[in-house]
Length: 411
Image 1 (cartoon, rainbow, N blue to C red):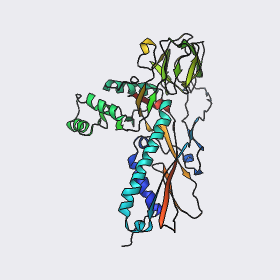
Image 2 (image 1 turned 120 degrees about the horizontal axis):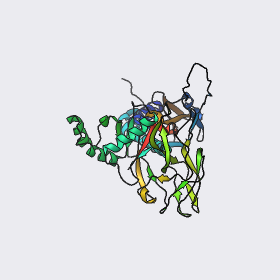
Image 3 (image 1 turned 180 degrees about the horizontal axis):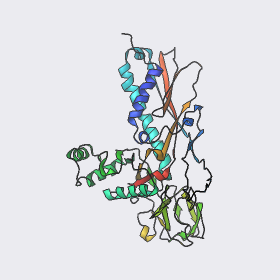
């Protein structure tokens, strides 16, 4: 039987196979959202766009009422090119395939997968505005996760296909909290032997743990009572005041609610009767007792096909920032591991096809359309040393496409 050579194509296929086995968060989000993501010869800074579904308002009666179409898209920037370089000899390439697999392709895939996971998690979590828990305190009850599921259902998120990717410690706490619930003995055994909550317990989601979860650091302010400053404010910014004098900061990803502003179901447009949570979309600092115009998501829209909430905030409506001590109106800088519960369509991860160099090198490019994986390998033989210096590259980006279909879990 002829020897199998460690060619760039063979090595790259091995790496890609291992890559898909190693990722956790990325494996559970959308990687095949649009054919436009398959970009040949892409480079850092290129942008692809994920198209959002149309939203319509149901009308009454027999009369035809034409509605405007909103071809909304979300940009996904290809922000990072990640690479790993290594070298092996011609002799190894001919006779030592197992060594190449264990010494090079498997570790390379593990590191590339973890780099992809870190980038994707950090790229999307701040855009998710629904959340459970308290900054700095790990969620310790199953009820909190059930309440998080209510937030998703309120807004019209499909019940099937929900995923949960948690900080490992949060997973351990959850497994312990659920140990006294009625469960099949095999499920309880898995929680104790693996330290992991059962895949489909609680009927909330499939459960995973990922050490690559992001850590969110909140802003800070001393005792204050922030309020809406001015009536009839809609859109993606708010004018507010009542903050701690010249000392209040809100960080991108900080979460707050507004008194009297509730979430709505995005399909029926019915109010949930529960406060809508908002996320700050850029770092913002107070000037005096006024906060510089506060950029927010979701935007405040109360009518039409793109409605997000049931009411425009009243002038003077109280703002409550998600913090360890909201009752006292205090926000202290707090760093917390953050997990996510979501359906895959909440997020998109993109790997574009890098340009193939042609001068004096052997190049392979593997794209798995089913997995949305694209990795390039370039090898150049060195006659003076009989070595094959090689590099594996991927060009990646991620975005929260439908952030309403997810909620954060504070750790």
